[in-house]
Length: 320
Image (cartoon, rainbow, N blue to C red; front, side, top):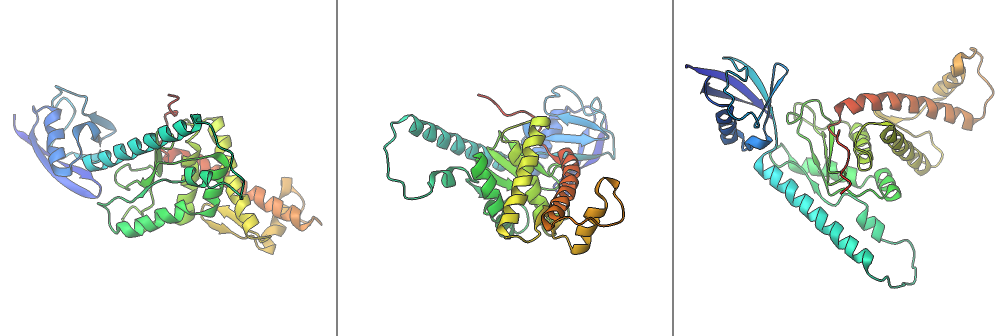
């Protein structure tokens, strides 16, 4: 049988592959491993709504539906990336085992000298790692560091006792359509921080909102009512924390940026309550702020529903 030639797109690069149609699918995976360093077990090939996995042993390219000139999108992580993730998970479990062991030992009473630093050490992002094969890793590390040191995020992590082993990137072409992924209920969180063209970074507050979403997956795996309730609570606590930090200024967190309602917007918030009249009510400044906050919360809820479609975390966390 004659050879067939097709293109495989992976992380912005296109690889042309030629193989006989009667060759097994495994030969295609082996060839792609040579070109991309992604092991067959980690390769996911998508074309025309179909998916080819390494499990299709014995199936030929023709039986899998491949034809000459077809274009395939490949997803997957390289062997180096998988090894790094495995090392991070091992390190995370080792720390957890040590912490559990310490918890079983008799506690020595110490004189309190203020707030404990234990939670500040435990409830945080333990490791930050940009993807070395993408442009400008130092700039990506700076963006990850900004997220990890964000006061509002540190506040909710301490409050809810969130611990994340690794905070890293999600390459735009690695998993198209995904903005975030939580691996192992907090063992690692991967975020889409770059633009699709790799020419810069996505807006900070958009990425931070995705990170709040993924932090909620530390507790709940599925996008059920439990998850939505916790996620809404995290976003509300971030907004309340920053409002308190702003010391009375109109400072509400929005996906598209910092929201500072003008006096006109506050007036409109009064007019459009429950389809009210066009005559502004004589409410207090606090009432106006509350209406503006409710309006922002409503927008955030709608945006959160859209965000669920771009989240790769769908399996519930393990209870073992």
